[in-house]
Amino acid sequence: MNKPKKKPQSREEILERKRENETERYAKIKNDPIRLAAYKEKDKQKYLKGKATGYNLVLCDAAKSSVKSVTLFGVLQRLFTLFSASVHRWKILTDHLGLYTIKKLSDTLWEARISSVKAVRYQISSIHDALITLAIETQKTDVKVSHEATTLAEQLKDFNFIVSLVVWYDILFHINIVSKSLQSTDTDLGKCTELLGKCCTFLEEYRNTGFKSAILTAKELAEELEIEPVFKATTRIRYVKRQAGETARDEPIASPEKIIEIEFFNCLLDTTLISVNERFEQLNEYSEYWSFLYNIKQIPEKPDLVKFCGDLQLKLTIDSKSDIDGCILCDELISLKSLLPDQNVATPVFVLNFIKDRNLQELYPNIWIAMRILLIIPVTVASGERSFSKLKLI
Image (cartoon, rainbow, N blue to C red; front, side, top):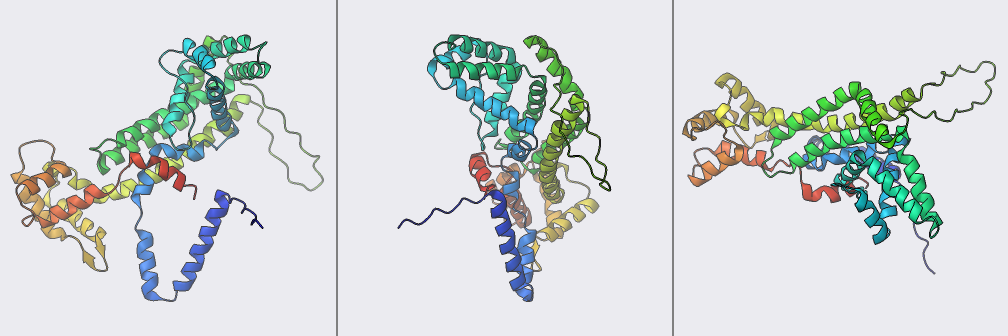
């Protein structure tokens, strides 16, 4: 007799089970001082790699923040599915398009999403014409395909859809800049923190002024499609008659534009900002301890340098044992600075190679250890983007 298949668990159920297991584990060790201390120490050690890998994946939750976001990517996926179903349909699409073409959406490779959004954002009228051409050619041979093409063409002419398209492209573009920059081989914590900080600043400014600018851009696209740039009113929600003593409900928002701003734009930006700020705060915490080592040619004066080295020693201390001595590290940095060639930048990689090539490890042991630790702190791993995004679901 075949055993019944287990019902697949949702992400929420898996997370809830993990929380219960963690609670049970803590209850077992809370009365054991040694095991409890080890547990707390392990909990404090944050796994930077998981947080920093694939920054474009911070938008996974944002894509589900509103109906408009889900609708946008649903339409993009339907466009790809429709045109990629046959060589003839794809030929119709490419004949109308220029530099960019639509891509298949992926839960793991968000660069495919920005490519698809970009293709529609800058060629929306051409894609609309391709849909009309396909609808006309298949009107007698395949009514289902013709109907799907006509429906998608009407969807592209929805001003609500155009505004959401513009907003998503602006956000994806800046997130992708950060992600691409962090995949370079010479990136480090300093550059990573700076890029994320600028990204956070952009998102905060866009949260305040981006909706108005997106509407202006959407109006230009509406002119290409020869439609009126007007927000469609949503269906009015009918409430059950209120009985005596019930709390009064808030009056529904009448303006369609305001509804889009509150239910789509604000939700999207708030969700994105939370995700990006979480990563920025963690990286900034690491950067505060390591930033003075990014360029030895520009180390601070000795009083400040002593403090930085002492803080780093405390950061690398576990069970009263540290990998480095802060006071000696300070003296080593001052000494090594005078030996380095006359150049404005002395990166950690350059310093390590300088020490290694001249066999100075024994003379500068603290710098040798600190630089190696700094360079192995993961900032991003492009090759791990797919696996990391799937591990998030576990």
